[in-house]
Image 1 (spheres, helix red, strand yellow):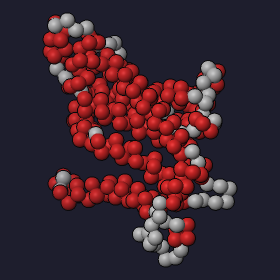
Image 2 (image 1 turned 120 degrees about the vertical axis):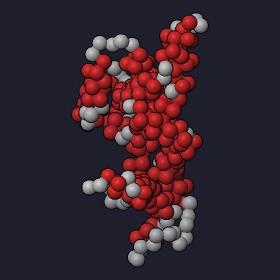
Image 3 (image 1 turned 90 degrees about the horizontal axis):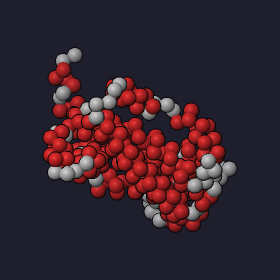
Image 4 (image 1 turned 180 degrees about the vertical axis):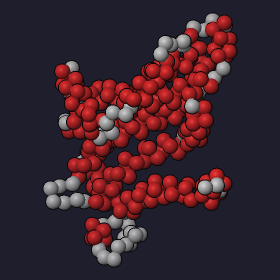
Length: 277
């Protein structure tokens, strides 16, 4: 088929529209559901727009379960895991991009391969490790695995950006008295800011949304994270979808705000990383 077909504006617009619809419409549906009453939700014909919008579901979302506590736990775990992931991946990415490492290609292949293991296959060894270290029901029990899970993607993103920065800038900094680590933090990291923001957003979202480890490693009510806490609204025979939807909107808001604030840097980082990688 002619390559002009695939590069046509109409096809690109259609592909972009499908991506937007796939990501945007479910969030809009959840938002509208969170504003409906139980009666309106089950009535027929279906009402797409709430006839009597109410915020009572949001009130119940915070009163039926300690949603604010879950929110704080998720925020703490995600922020700590993201910061630690960026620190370690910056060092690893710089070493791969700049140092004359033996078997460099093998290291990159191993990093990619390590990210392909399904999380469920790692659950038992992670659980046994945390139990042996007496870390169950602590932030550390989640932060340490999240760091390990975030490292491959963060490292690969940063490697592509570090490779695009001229070595002469680091050499000039080291001539002026910087150590290699000093040149990394003072020269390379600022210049690779789009990549750092991109890696940070990916790490934060992965840590924020993770469910399996959060459910298995922290069974204490005071240590539950938001994804686990949201599952507790349903009963054995009841599914309060408006309240669950309200809790989901609360979970979506921090991610939406984060993306809105750093949108240009994230989009620029993903684009530049794809072009340089």
